[in-house]
Length: 114
Length: 114
Image 1: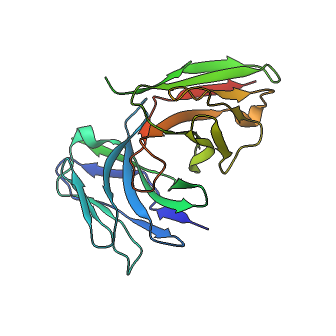
Image 2: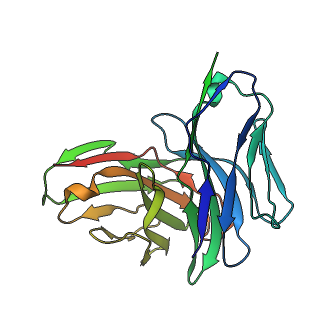
């Protein structure tokens, strides 16, 4: 079946540090890949996405590249801020049967300190 | 404002007492879905709906029912809640049920079943 594996947290960084959150996937087919972010007490919101191999998604200084050869979609940011503290979910979307389905990783909590 | 709303946001109930969590979206989206979020498990899909009167099971449908009588509403029904249904529930919608579409999430409903 389809699955997403992302690094366990929490990840604790100082402000302005470089961030990488690893994400790898297993899928039967050619999925779309997403990063969603969940701020405390809120629902998930899309951070960025990529729909085919070698696409780079980017938003708010975050970026991730769809690497088919390594089945990965690692999230990076050059300089994190305290306001980036949240839980980050990697997900794949794949059409199977009658509908598309989003499969999520377990989430990685990021805490950024001053 | 384009949004997905859920009610109630918090609910404490007792085993066996039927409850309904409402979900409504104002974006004219065809696709709607319910997820539950549990620590260490990420988000798992309960049910989804491709359009009015079309619903189907997700990964963890046992103990839940849904209906889609109108495009904007997708209530989640627990006929006889049990403690293992204590969780954080999210409703989501997207324009179509295709794999590249972003899903928009509601703020969540935290349910405790005693």
